[in-house]
Amino acid sequence: MDAVYTPVADILAGLRQQVSSDKGIARFNIARNHAWEGARRGFRRASFNPEFAISVKFTDDIGTAEGAVDEGGPRREFLQLIVDYIASSPLFTGSDTAKHLNLLHYFELKITILST
Image 1 (cartoon, rainbow, N blue to C red):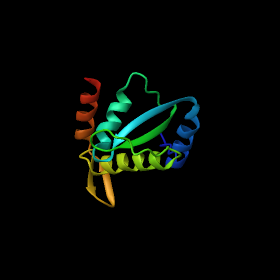
Image 2: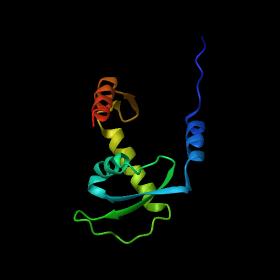
Image 3: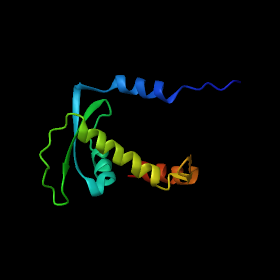
Image 4: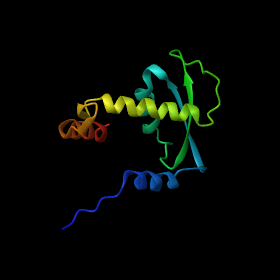
């Protein structure tokens, strides 16, 4: 059986088409120093829907908002912080130019998420 490969760009474009602010907005209050923890809290909310557009407001460590309106910049920064965190986490192994999924950590993470 031949393997079928779909380019990542096509996968991301398909996912992007499913997201709309017309469906709703998922609001995240994020402290830059704790972006991963804030993301996990937001994604675990009962009201979170992956088809909603994401709106991000950065706060300092005591919760005071920076006051910037999210017109795309804060959301891009938030997503970059999350990608950086995941890329440097034990979920991936290898050099900076050749990362591979660490299956042992992946399954441990999956079990942890499913048990919460």
